[in-house]
Length: 405
Ligand SMILES: Cc1cc2nc3c(=O)[nH]c(=O)nc-3n(C[C@H](O)[C@H](O)[C@H](O)COP(=O)(O)O)c2cc1C
Image (cartoon, rainbow, N blue to C red; front, side, top):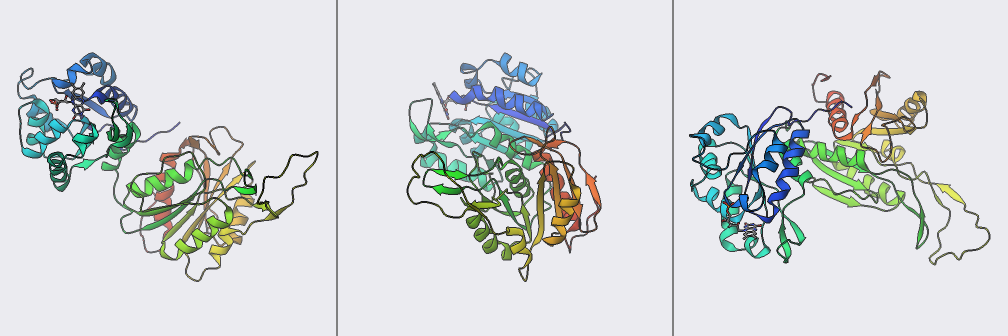
């Protein structure tokens, strides 16, 4: 599988501090290495009570630095080397030092010597996280451009309930990635649809399809990371909403999805219909649970075609559709593009290995209005999302970009 991460070959310093969440730094470093980043680790002395340098050495491939005095001028040399600084987990104590220019250990001395982009993932007891003294430090760090990946709310290792559990590793990685992604979609508004719809038979049963929503969520996440104002209309999925999007609209049925799309489309420059709204819905749905019996005849009627409705709008966005087919039926995709007056259609054969529903990869062919077909190799949905956005920007009227193959 082809993989391109914006973190590839980027020089990252990961600071690990004395929080119960310190053990999660091992997984973070491992994931950053998966992204092919060049990672070095600096640990505070308090963090050594929670995790051994050996674990982080094995994850990063280099000996972590654990003090200001063990390698003379390490803080200055690291400042010349690093392109990005991640503090995860970040204690109240270390953040207090960073906010106040205290430089009494390697991490805080590095921060002052460095002046580069910094991402922090606080982890602490809710009392600490909500304390005015800590809030003041956090506000100051934000005001000088430090990015916070906010902690989650829930049960904490210290036994407390509330806000303070370190953000998920994926959110931290996403935050690091977006620091290296060009903000070339700033000023663009993108409406993305994702997931299946559910068409109710009765209050407990519905018909649906295999769409996981992964492609639509990947598109929304990629567009937001490149600076677009993203509205995501999604059917029921098990996915965590992408961070950085402007608006999330959850819908259940194809009718609700259509209503949301028609409402949001006039204020959107680009519409990408990655959802799989149902083509059919029960002719009638019962308000009470249908009792089990020997036989039940289900009558279906076609749902409204959302893309066809969009094509009838007076001012419609640049519209991209998806065609999921079971076989190499390129003509059907092209026919759909013409019939629904689309600007671009993304064809995928869901019977192919590594393509289609509930899969982390996809293999697509892209058609524009000129009928030219671009066959894209199998790749991760995140990477594909960026590639599709590149192609949209080439074809979008008023933008003058060359295809970035
Ligand atoms: C068991 C234990 C767990 C701790 N967990 C946290 C924590 O999650 N977040 C935090 O800010 N401080 C936590 N502390 C307090 C810090 O370890 C302490 O403030 C220390 O000075 C932090 O040093 P550092 O910022 O240099 O790593 C914990 C302390 C103990 C004893």
